[in-house]
Amino acid sequence: MNLFKSHDSIRGVMQRTYYLSQLLCPDLKAVQAGTTSLLECEGYSFQVSMVFDRHVIRSVASGAWNVYPIKHRAVRFFNTSILFNAMISTIKPALREEFRSKIRVGCKFPCGRLDRIYNIPSEEVAVARLCQKLEELIRRRFDNERNFSLEDAFVETDSSGDVE
Image 1 (cartoon, rainbow, N blue to C red):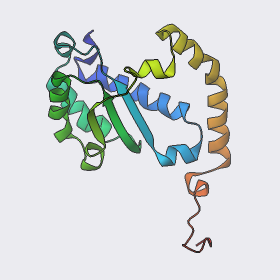
Image 2 (cartoon, rainbow, N blue to C red; image 1 turned 90 degrees about the vertical axis):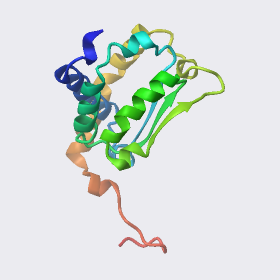
Image 3 (tube, rainbow, N blue to C red; image 1 turned 90 degrees about the horizontal axis):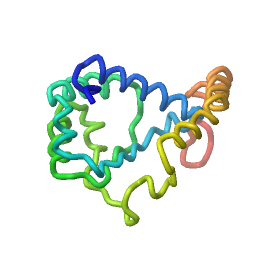
Image 4 (cartoon, rainbow, N blue to C red; image 1 turned 60 degrees about the horizontal axis):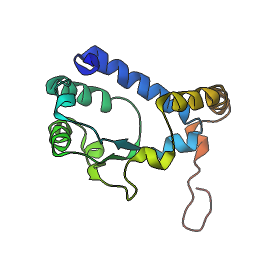
């Protein structure tokens, strides 16, 4: 549980998360559109928060979230506690305004937890499903990068529909 106690360990987690998110999103139009992160927080407790060093998290948040070139459309934390909301409020000032404005805490789903919607019975099943798709995702990503660029993926049109 000391994963988030040092700058290096949390930076490693964020680096792996960044590269995995790029891999899981092989289509350049989707990369350009940005990501929406839905994070389940049910079960977050005071004992969990003792694992986190607030200063390390703020420092890494300002460094990593402000550096990695991910376009965030929205970041939603579901089923948050008052303690979790307080922790997020200490981190938000260290973030760029454009990212900070996209964070929402206290979101609720009518059916409860997020994992009920996605029907993932266990972490092992989720990892197995990812591993089954990984080779195809990598191949698509490299094919798209070889054949297209983000500039090619989007052609600007004026109001009449003509290409500018």
